[in-house]
Length: 213
Length: 77
Ligand SMILES: [Zn+2]
Image (tube, rainbow over all chains, first blue to last red; front, side, top):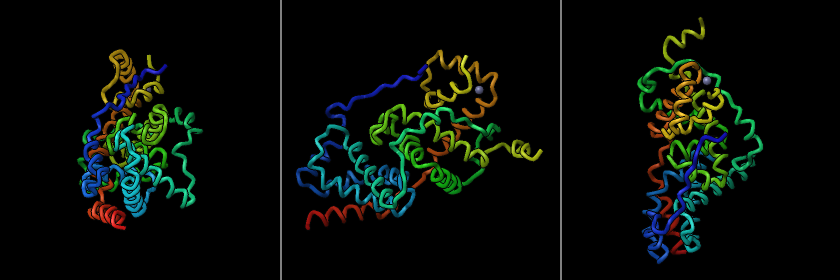
């Protein structure tokens, strides 16, 4: 039984916050493109970090994605939000780089998603009440970055779009060209994997002693 | 009554506080008797807060300049 309900908001005319700037660039005002870069470069870069897993590749791919968006802006007619259209370009750019590295990728293969529905947590020890208080901001950031990067790419991309960029499940599905149900399954699995990976760092002190007791 | 697997599948709604009232009731009933699920839900909430709260994968500062430089180069070529 599916207890979850999903509301999809169709894109309505005038809803795209970027439409006015896009129109200016389309009319020849190249410098206005800088506004679009500023608004979206972070999301594009993080998405490409999620896909490529390598900082230099992500930077390079971000640059290429924006350049392609600029060159093809004449083909953008507002059928989707500009941000969605841009993210599609970025994702294709990232996947292309993986192919060039001859890395097998499977962000659109769902053959093992069935097994994932049976993924079970294994770590059940209690966490501290304020787990992040034990670490500095830098330590936390480095820890999260390193554990996120250890996730398999198809979970990593979903977790990054959904939990780091705070895109909706629907936006994430559209950007990755996946079914909403697939995004939900992978998000659940990715979050649970991340939880298991982070757990040893945030356990209550007495819980850690239990291990050796 | 929900089983542990069904509780897990409600994780997303639990985390974004969008559980339907009847599901919330069933879930609370389950958590009352299942410490494992209680830990998983509680630590998943912590995980999400930690992940969203630390500024991961910060953008290199010069990137927007490099992007605009390549855009301008296209325009003049
Ligand atoms: Zn349970």
